[in-house]
Image 1 (cartoon, one colour):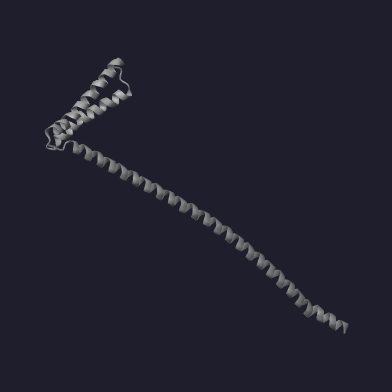
Image 2 (cartoon, one colour):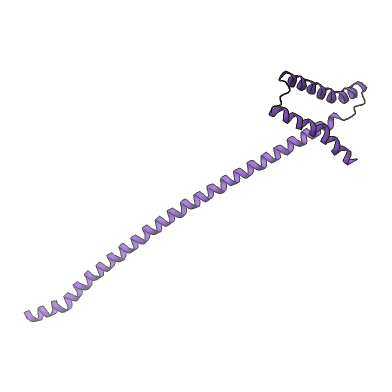
Length: 155
């Protein structure tokens, strides 16, 4: 009977116990493997989320810069159009003789006075030209010579 009991326990019970321990160990390894996969997946998702946030922020920054550039361009165009309209309005004939005479004389008179002040200031410095003087000379030539050439070429 003892031999039968040992045979039984040695065969069936040992396989049952060994199978249960083996299943438990396999399940533990599977569980650990699953946890490792979950941890890696979580880290990948966090990295992807960070990249997505950075991409969205960069796109938003670029969009804001584009809007600012467009607003600056529109503002410059509006300012240029307003200046051109103001210049055109100075040549508008009103029908009032003294106002029309004033409008026609004010620009040449203002330019002559400014030119006289500039020449006197250069005389005080001994006609030594600095960077500002060269800029004024180029502006003078551009306005009074270049503009006249441009105006005559349109005629």
